[in-house]
Image: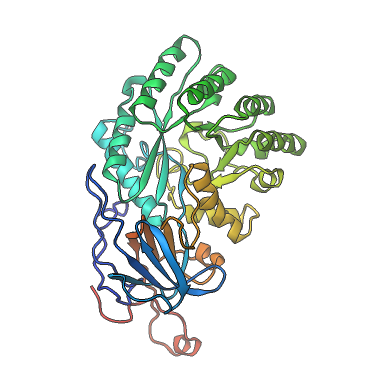
Length: 436
């Protein structure tokens, strides 16, 4: 099995002390059918929270039912996951993916767009990102040209097949919307929305009339009540100012990214642009791991996150390319995006993680998640004690979507027997007792 193919997790005995105990085999929700029952109760035992507390968390009905000190919750959940040694966090979300082109960097010749190929890539990419912890993914899908709406139909089919495992949303991305050639693109964009594209996107930088492109997208979005998510390098202050003016007041909102061009503007121009975006309520999704192929690698610098945040712009972080032409080694890992924001973007670890969790969910129109009673049970448990350590060495992960474990990654670190290893009491992450 190739390293890009998710493996079916091995069953763990209930209450076992492997990598997080166990809930039995993970079973997908089926192709187009109802997801596994969300009413089954699940107890997460001995989890550490970011405030230092060690707690038990009971889940049921897809939500967090109760949070109490370790050992305080009455037994009753039929399934139990031991999270001793794990930090429990709101699950990240992926606000900027390209499932239709993912995993194509190693292929020979042009990328294939047969529906079954696109569906397989989109499905595999979403599962890889789920394994990293993203329980919701927004995938930008190119439409038009010789392939028409075929790639979008394939991604929508992947969305249906993944129901119960992860939430996959499609963004329709036309190339041209103005002039004679743009008339066909606009008609196809309307068809894409009727097919099920939940978000309207595109790359105004690539249209001969970028302002006209934005106007067409915003008009259609207002007509259908859809959010907008546009690709732009944001290296033209005048164009960015016009976008902010047009986007102001649109509901349910406008997101742009990756905006690496803002980092190349003179500082005063970048400050003015950030103020204009904040005033218009336009969100920015940056890509710390590098630009995506949609912008044809115009620049490799990430958006100036601290400058944008200081102006009041709501900034989320995405992964962008996942081993395609935009980034042949892209990992699609939200925690790596957060790591880069903390190591190079000047954010504190907690702020960096919020960019891939709280801010990403907000940008995608998803409900807020906290590890508190009443909130959605969208959670990620990572072996470690603090966010800084988790972003540094986030190997073992347990992913919870709609109140059940849907992915599990186990890393084992062992050291050979030696005097120095014994003297230093180096940590081992092997199993505490035999298991499958």
